[in-house]
Length: 457
Image 1 (cartoon, rainbow, N blue to C red):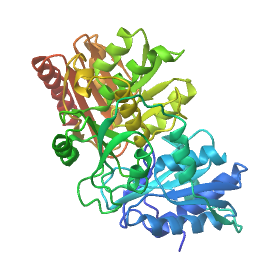
Image 2 (cartoon, one colour):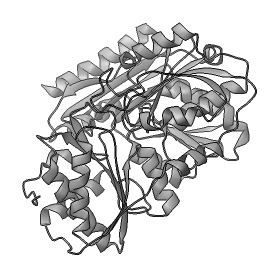
Image 3 (cartoon, rainbow, N blue to C red):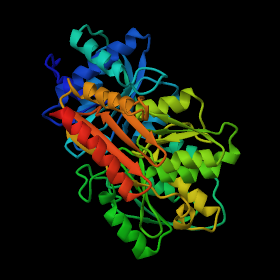
């Protein structure tokens, strides 16, 4: 292993470190990050960290290189080995060790890998913190020492956590789960079988090549097998999980894809009368149907920037009972510990169904229908994309449009919205639109894409 002076700066992104293995991230990269991480936490007065890895084929070797670097700085490691990201989060809480790294590329393609990391109780690093860590690594002034490696099996503790945080009703629900051959495969079946339901599992073997479909459950095309199985076995709900287990995607009893913002509506309806603080967070990409429903229920909606590291910290810092984002991350704090777990999110849906007689389709039939686009991408170099988004804001001002600037520019109308933002993960500007009619959706899309394309010339 060698210190990599020419480490790829582009892998240090908005929410984590992520790139293609082995061209952008290799064992020398992992070793160098380990040297930097161990030294950084020692500078903070920390002596111990927690490390885990997902089931990608490159994860074990990157984990070995990473831990070698950390140990050489004199920091002790508690190794979880193969685990989901939520299992790693809970280990940090359970053991009261908040410095740690999870080797994972979440829902990215099989050839990608990366690192989610935290220095202290403030949670996963994000934004400028990640750029500051890159600068620290590049200086190369690392601590020296001989750390000790110990292991900890978090599985039993994790299962017990679920057992004490759920309360099922009398109805026995038929559930299909799809771990997508990701890391939840190591625990999903055992966990769900702890509770009273009729369970069917597909793609439940751990396989880091993800042979059956891409491990992103919030993209509808990845749920075709789940939809088919739900209809085949007449299931009440279908649940899918991403590569490292912190996100959930869902299909209804009629195999209709249910976006995460509509899932959030069902959760908020269920909990709003049970929590003292009736404030709920959602990101800028979520449907107006969600904010409308929170208001209708007498609650307060908080619209916030996209990004798991940001939204989770905001829900915690503002002491909110629940929050989430369109990408599938949700944070329960009403009777859960606030970290995102796709398996827990799915079980909360099954629990809700066990206590009522309605189907998921019936529960969602009164949610107002809005029409939206997918996230549209436009190429824009990193040195100009933010200034172009600023000019979209200036355009909105010139038209006296109400807009938010917490994450790009989200222009608000009574009948919809337009969102234009700079990507945090690549040289792109993204746009998304929503309206209460297809005709209005087309109007909004045409207006703002025309302006954006002019600015990109």
